[in-house]
Each structure stands twice: as C-alpha cells, then as structure tokens.
Length: 334
Image 1: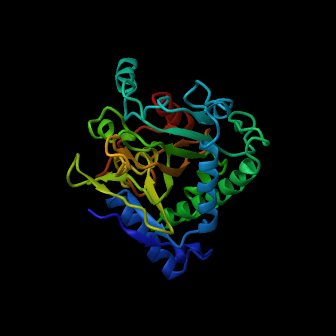
Image 2: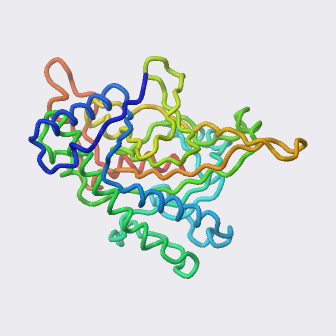
Image 3: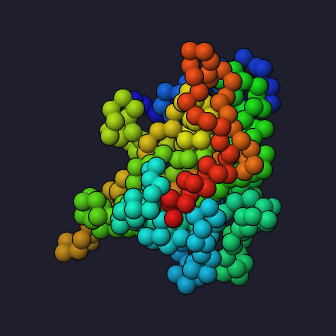
C-alpha cells in the first residue's frame, strides 16, 4: 500500500464543473476510499507561512516551563485549548470505560502540545494565549494561519463532495462555524532504548475522530500509517517538501457509511543521534508537527451521506450530533 501524492492545483479553481476539477476530485475520493491518507501538493497554504508556523512553534516550546504552565489546557477534555505538558495526554483508541482509560494512561505520550481554535469563538471555546510580551507576534500569526487553513479545509471538502458525486457544498454546509483546532506538537529528545522497548510512546496507534486532519510535518518525520491489507503492519509516511498529509477521521467515515476510510496511524520514535561521548545514552531526534483538525458544526446532526446507502446497503450507524460525538472521544483522551 502506498500513500498517493495528489496535485491539488486543479482544485484551487472556483469552477467545480471543469473537467480537470472533476478528475482531481475523483482522485481525492479514490485515495480516501482505499487508503484514507493522501499527500496534497500545490495546495493553498503558502510554504513560507508553513515554515513560519514551525518557527513560532519552536519559539513557544523553547519558553521557560513556568511561562508555558501559565496557559494550561483546562481539565475538561472537550476544552481543547492551551498547553499540555509531557505526560498530560494519552491518545486512546475507542476506549471509553474508566478502567480501560486508566490502564492506557499508565504509559503517557512523550510529547507536549499547545492548542488553539477560532479566535472569534469567545462564547464556548475561548483561546488561551500566552501574554503578548512573553512571545510577541505569536497570537497574531496563528490567527492568520488558522484562517488560511480554514480556507484550505473548504477547498478539500468541496473536492471530496465532487469526487463522491454530491453537490460541491454538501460538506461545506456542515462546516461554517470554524469549529476546528490547530495543535502545535513537540516531541523532545528521548532515551532511544525507552522508546524502542515501549516504555515511552510518541503517539500510540489511533484514528482521528473528526471530519479530517491536515498535517504539516517537519523533516524528521515519524508518522506511520497502517497497511489496510495487513493489519498491524505500518508503512512510513515520510516528510515530502511542500505537501500536506491529509487523512479522513472517524466522523466522516461514519457519515459516509464506511465509504471513506479512517486509517490507524501512529508516531514512531525518530532516529537516534550518535552522542559525542560514547559513554552517553543514545537520544532520539527532536521533532515538531502541526495538525489542523477539522470538525463539523457543533449543533449539526449528521445522517448517512446520500449515495452511500440503499436497499442492498443498509445504514450502519444511527444519526449523531457532531458535538456529542467529538466530546465523547475527547474526554477519553485527557
């Protein structure tokens, strides 16, 4: 199984009826139906902006620990804003009972993160920004970056809809509130032996639970995707300059009656660097990534996508409210 690389240039057009748009939409649909992942090149997020996002991410995580701790992620799992220190989060896969969650959390993910969302959502999910004098320009940049990612999100949703033979705005109409999330992730250097023996995790095997995810990687990489033909076998999804890694989430898989695939993936330990002093332990390379998680509007209830069910293909899932579904999944993570 290979992860396809799709040229998004024809899909930047506003003319969804053009032959090249329809053809590229089919490519997107085919990738998400059979693999669940795709590399997207020639997309709508300028590379200069992506590079700047990584520079800001490093600046944030380089802050003194006491400064990062001043903007903590709230205790509620659904309030995905602010900073989570190393060991705070454990990504779990479809584990909802307290005993199961507790067992999973015995080996927390070895990473730290900072999360933000729509700056205009001040009613329910207000952003938790560091003070401007602590990291000047950080807030202003990520407000712009968020809007740029949202614009790309809408183009992706239109392309998927066209590829499935739906009205181009079918999915867009459920994603108007910008109920999305940017997460800055930092994986510090770790003792290679602890990662290799499983005593520490990068991010354990899981599927994403929203509509879809746009992932920006650094050169270190580390993402691996399960081979759909060989369960438990993972293939590397290395960094490809100028691309976004896009994958389908559980919510869209459910919405499409499993027509689109939400694929298991994890973050493996990066390659270790040779210590200058041979008596020192080998440490993994430092890694950064920036996922943008797409979620449907909170108050919308989704039912099976037209064309994905019928007399010979019954609906597998009951209708579900977007907010209820996402909150259930988030509360098992924190």
